[in-house]
Length: 388
Ligand SMILES: Cc1ncc(COP(=O)(O)O)c(C=O)c1O
Image (cartoon, rainbow, N blue to C red):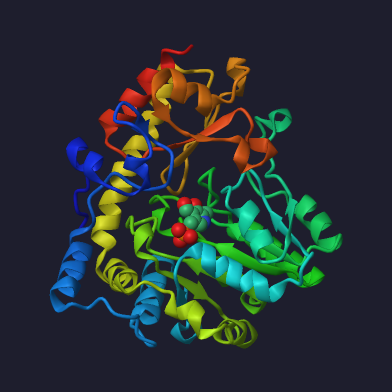
């Protein structure tokens, strides 16, 4: 049964000490960093309260139930058969990505990303010794603005692989455009990767936030080629709002990839947060009715954002996200000379994420976090519309 999920009251949000509600003064509506304004799911609160009552705040155990619980969730939710023996925990998705890349590239190797893209990818790759190779999404530039959904450019990916890139850091569903790549696209990626000896690391952190009626396809599930050379990194942290608890899973589906992760220094696994493991187990095992309620709230907001923009800011481009709670807004038709998020913050006190750090294709854009109350979303758009 679906639970009802709504945003926490404003006074509670303002008392939070994490990034979203503490970065700016009280007159700013914070719609930037990817945290949500909802309370924790009751099953997670119960699990964490019980852990606190037990004083259960030591080091994470070397064997936990999380791999099995995650595999069960993946099978129920996506029909993805995961072998729990190929699932390893670490502190967060970023760390999982870096630790895997570190072992598949030699310093100086190219690693492909597909801008506009989650800005930290530009830093995680050099952290792992790689060099960023940009292959923008089709439809990401003003020139091909109207060419359907923003999607992977398979021809350009092939060219980058042929030119020597050693890895591809895939984002599925894609942040910031909120699109799960299709099975056909992913199969094509896997076959190109196999042909050119490229390792694919698929960041699937937003996958549980795929809307009903849309389809998330796990990269490792699309073909034998994908399973043989790919890695996936996921967590409960976006969908259940647990980023501060530090827990993610690295998933493998073949002996060689499993051995590579199993051979990481034990510290990589030890850095997993104990409360993160307990909360993630509760989320994946018992948190689906809450997740479905959250998706209802987000569905209402992604639709009403479309309606609000159409009425009050019709020049702003918006394609409704199929997954996640981030809206990628194109302000480039307004003719502003200043970067949009900067102007909007200064003049309307709404904090969006600036588009330029998402890559060159992000210029003139800003990302809005719609995981808030419908009232706050309306207020933000009304404030921004005063700028027209
Ligand atoms: C695509 C993507 N990957 C990784 C992260 C960061 O995840 P973590 O905090 O687990 O490193 C985010 C956060 O929003 C994200 O959107």
